Length: 330
Image (cartoon, rainbow, N blue to C red; front, side):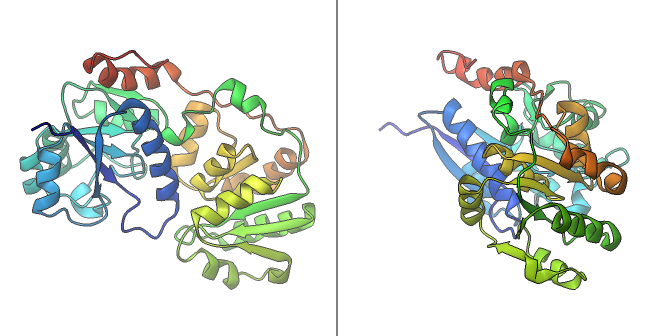
């Protein structure tokens, strides 16, 4: 009897109220289907505790691949973005390979539980892909040398040729986002009022559970703002059929806009967007700089000149393809 080889995918879009996780996993699966053309993908949730069945599936699969998101931190036993324990890690030792993952925030050195957990989980022979140089440095500083910065898989198709097709000039329509767990009433109000002043049509996409409530709390002309429903399907359809700019604090709301060839300005509120700007030249303005810098970005020509690390991306992909005896990806 012949069984199909399986790949366990540690999926961050299961048991989540943040549609950004869906955007990440959409890209993760797209890349994995390119690399593992004849494999069975088994989905394992990261946002809830893995049971014995899940551990068994990972243990008996060829690899377990963790896809995207800020799933790592310096205190993984405290923040539990990835709900796995030190005891559970003993059952799937060195089965895990990282794909475009990131670090939760700017943090101190990982604690001993985190170091032991990652030592147990991460494969020592295969290359691990991380989304920025900050995450790379955090892992290298605790003894992992097989780490490469590939950017997030949501960005892997942003070649120079692709970026050249994204409009440089301002649209009459804009879609924006807010982040309910990172509020700054003064600057978020400034952003919304600026958009209402400079755009004819203003839309708001609800990416997270509390974003619409936060918008309603703010003293803005709510009747002038049209709502895009809180689904990835609705947002994708809007972007495909509406010529617009994207400006907002939701990083992956902006990435999705770029995936649909929309002029995009991401408002950086944490290390994720800021590090992507440093490493890959993503068009990001830190929220604290909105009052002095947003006007220029919006009203003047804005080229999209993202620099993705194609060599590292191909290194990560080809390690699997070459092991299977197939042609490499380039």
